[in-house]
Image 1: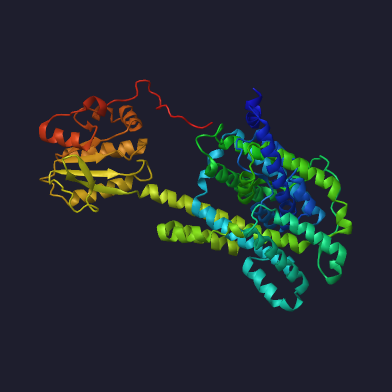
Image 2: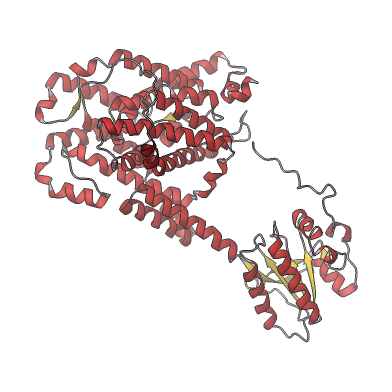
Length: 583
């Protein structure tokens, strides 16, 4: 019973000392990553750095109890941060008390949305974000995040705007740049990238923060005009509900839906890419929605901003040897202890903000998927243009608008593909059994008295006109005095709706008036069931339904249906075929 309420407890079954050791070590490694990342992503979101640390303490523990994956690391991520600041900065000044209240309320709304969507089995929503949209969106978001950090890197402030406006404003104010700040930032980026090639396992972001704080304390680096974090609250956050006002709820709905969707999709993408048949428990989409939603709900109570799974951190999670989500619990304990002990040190050893920006720039640079763009350009131009449109609109208009346009294009492309699917005439190429596309195989032979064609999509109301138009065009190209048989290869048709049934009935009647018989071959079970229970039930006989094209041709030539019983077989129970489905 407890395992159903808390799926994460399954990892404790047969929990061994070796697993405990691996989880403990990996928990420490991930804590080293989360401390600088959490602080940095909080600053990206326009929040104090401690809000990022709060997001690293309680939400991962909640996910550890409710999540169904032992391969992802939950916490602050770059995409959520940029979504937060772009959505909230139009409602309040980043860093202001009003802004902080809205951020916590946003976390509550995101968690509630995800939790409720999981309860109503809405996990399939992730399917509407196609690969080109995700690549285009995340690549643009990476550039936007890097752009927002350039202000801190050069030590000046500029007005908001898209990435191009931001770069222009930075260039215009080049004379006001703090070259000391820029030098520290570049040095920090080099310290994280150059040695990592030789010592990949060392936590360079944390080493950089410690080194920066020590250097800042000894040399009073803020006197040189370098902006610093000189204090963060000591201790753990207290639990409290954010202020909930109806106007605020209405204003936050668009950004809450975007953050909730992208957080869930990102988490599921990582889960599914790492899943394998040997796993004790497969990732369950609806359970993941509930788990991430619950993590954000608890996060809202302890002044955290929204969390989800991180690509880079999840990779480090596995590389560090994590076996279960117990590793995340250890990370939370380490970070909680650090807040109790390390927080007072910021007064004597302030942290240069530019180092956090350097960490963010290096971390998110991997989100720019140039290699994937090149591959998609070579393999599928149509999907590449969806990627490119999503990428450019996200850069120019903003992350929410870019995501909306990308998803809309994907849905339109899906609709177009099903309303104008592949449909081809078939011909015989060898041994009286193999039928192929006559446009691809020049050796395919076509009989004057038989038209054989295949339709490669579900047959429903949106593509029935296309079906009729293409079929009648082929008929017009034939000698109607010679043509006696039309054969539909239904192998690729998985469903037929009521509109399509009416359309097929009209075609059959029209052809019969011209002395042409209409045959259906290779119809799968659900299609046969639909025909049997529709107005076409009288048509479903051994003289019109065939298991293969070869059987249909044999019947035409010899009057024999070799597999008649199989061709007209339907489900005797009247219910859908049993298919194993994830919960």
